[in-house]
Length: 291
Picture 1 (cartoon, rainbow, N blue to C red):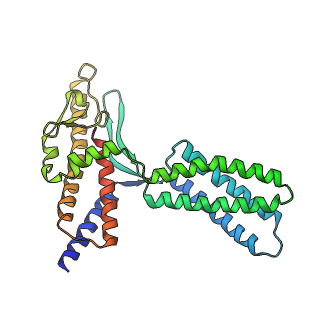
Picture 2: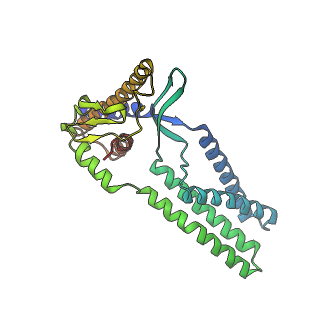
Picture 3: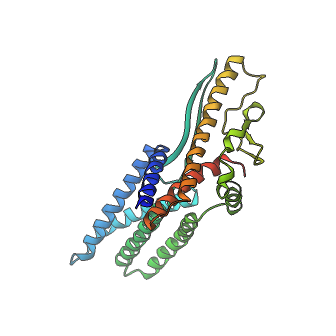
């Protein structure tokens, strides 16, 4: 009973921490709501048209129109690798004012939950059913045109569905393996990981000598002493220290989660929640470290 209570408290604490990272992209959210409104209207029209005694051509054309829009959007997103989820992981966001310049130091990561891709695949599969059924009804006396349109749909949508399924398990196996073996699995030897972190020259990145690791370039504000005044260099240093402090706190939280969760038991439902929390932390550090 005590073990169960501890696991609940641990997950509750880190769910609260993780939620603070997520920021809503209003444009993406409005686009998602609009798309789901179109899908809902198309679904209602399809069901209505399916059960009325005499099908209505106008309703059928509306269903086809709505389906074409949704499927074109689905294809565009997959072909051009456009993120569709309406939330980003925001790690830091600072405004820097120099003597003659203004600079925004920001790090936001795309993060699409697995449930979201499953929903997108499912809803677009349903949409394919809509359009195929309506086209076969509208063009029942034109089999050649029906065959051409269905073939075009298949050619257009097959790569999109395959790409979506791949994104469910998409990862760089080599990078993730290095990260897991060096950092995550051996977390017990990495409690002081960020205590040993040192900035490289001009703040190009951060060096971890103990682990022979470096952060990716461009996460910190590059400082060229030849082009900046002493005051500007000092301001950049303050922001870079804050950025590093952010990652230090995130690692401290993640270390706590890994350490305490290893000593607790979780139900299947709570284990899924733990997996999701770890996935967010991993996403942050896979982006941070140049492994």
